[in-house]
Length: 239
Image (cartoon, rainbow, N blue to C red):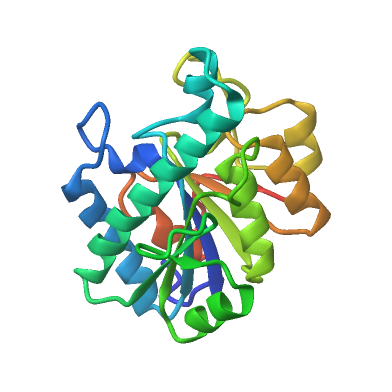
């Protein structure tokens, strides 16, 4: 029998840009954004305060530009701007479901997003507005995973939920290694020692230092976000 009482009051959800792809090879699938928005509305209706850190890999990934010969900082800034585009799309989708949303960009871009002011963001959450963070922390060389950990700590989130295309942390990439074994849970230190790649090491170290749990789960399994916030067994818990 499932628990109907949320295990967490305030969460930070890390969404990759790829989560907005749907069946597209690049860009934003509006129907996919709508599907995610519906799941987020369910959390909102449960009284959970929701913040989201959005990635940009469906449009441009900084590392790809670097590998092609671009200056790392320039490529990373392009990737950060891609997350702003995704933030606008996700805000539109969520507000179409009747939930007030605030888009917060770490890069000053006032025409489409508010600047990050910690106390104001917390007040938005207290007023039951969904928060979308874009542009990471506004600086190159930092992943959106690390930005998610930092923002989660700043807003006093109780957990980071990282939505991926696999259903947890494995000994190897399960897409490539058929014998890869899944961890139901793993300590921060073991995750770092094993060099596991599903989340950035810097982000995990930051969570370790501040005792902030992380749950890695498969977004493609409908209802997984809700199961995670209700404390049901889903994905892998790092902590």
